[in-house]
Image 1 (tube, rainbow, N blue to C red):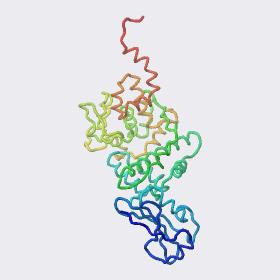
Image 2 (cartoon, helix red, strand yellow):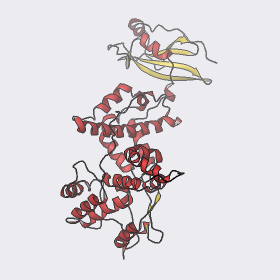
Image 3 (cartoon, rainbow, N blue to C red):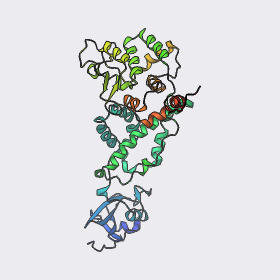
Length: 393
């Protein structure tokens, strides 16, 4: 049971100056089971403390310095009235408050992510560039909505399409930060009282526009042919992208053993959405048979010309060069080949469930990204597949 608290004179600077210096706080009761304490020191400002009876014992915490010498700022240096409000406001005792910093929270999240996703490295690069330098030193439980919105806006650059792209990139970084902070908040051991600061920060809207470039087989053949004039290995990478619809990061990690000509399949072991099996056409099988011929099972299926793996951004310059030679729009990118694969498959009537399995995406995402292609082919599908009573001349 909480014991009665003595009433020491601590309301003014003058009354506090008359108290003898000591390590034990001078307490005064401020509510049931609560007391505001003042620690008098021999020199310099004293400290305000709060004591509360919780769970059958006292919990104590330091809540700030007293305004014995300097001016009060309401946060770190407090008047008696400010300290009283802090001591009586709802909150956790010091033993239950979090000292976790953003840098530690992000690092813990990315360590866990590395065991589950092939894209953890990319997430860490974004965090090291945009999150840790700006926010890493801040305590998670002291982040504010305004602070995070200023940080988010600071990543936006340029005008027009450049601005849209930077906002889209900022949204991706915000997603990483929120995921890390949510993971920290969900761990009770971190004792973070609220997630409101980052939960209320909204991403930029309407900036993640779907990539519209997609090409027919003739244009892709020309692109591949132009790439072959300066780098046959890159031409192989382009052809594999169109034939399978796989993402760049999935293709560059393939080994010879992942290709099964007998079953006409390609195993993607570390896909963005997990492992999956891609069903191949006869043309695709012949293409991969040529690439895999007489090579060790552990060898890369689509290596660079020097036999090494393609780096994260090494496709940009050769793709732009090949696209320019082929007369494709400047907005075209490596992703356009995946987009082209999906668009042509939908037009040909491939079941969406099978296409989702091959691409490693959801039906909802497919319907959203390729709504324009689906709309264009809807009437043709209905005409070909709907029941009919009579033949229409």
